[in-house]
Length: 227
Image 1: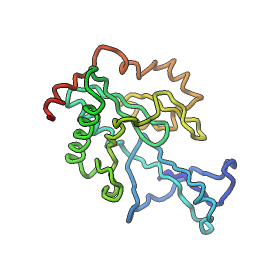
Image 2: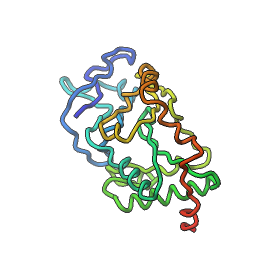
Image 3: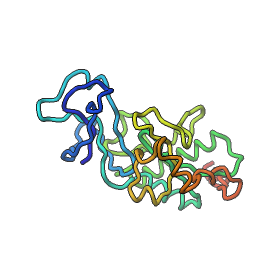
């Protein structure tokens, strides 16, 4: 399995301080979390950990795994939203996850949208508890599940806008993409400041439909049903 790690502690500016490598698939235990994803590279850099000690000779200290597979939770979210008659759009965060959006008819309050999102996440996790969870308390969250983060709709929550550069060495960008690209194995690292202009010229602005007045989903009937 692809991994990011090091065998010798070096300054972060050194190109050898973090290395892409292939290692045996890890077996999660205790509080470990191993998520099967294709389109998200989870490569956290823990500088303090790297400064503490080097691994034993010939071994690796792994900072992040890039697990091969299918983005099961994103696919579940898409299927469920489409089942309600919505048209979901997806973009990478440019960092560690995916954002799924739906253009809705204006009218519902922020609290109403949050209420629907929470019910949607809880119901989805109930249907597929083997893959997803809506549990926000980390201590109560089951291992090996992906959080469907309905609180991204909470008041005052910030998140990376489409095409926003992220503070990563690779210069990655929060990039809208097609579901077919996601299914084909698109990665967060595929979209950065260097190649985004050419991508926009080739595929156009995939986020534009969210701003169009036509084609919006009327959330009001579903909100009424929740009351």
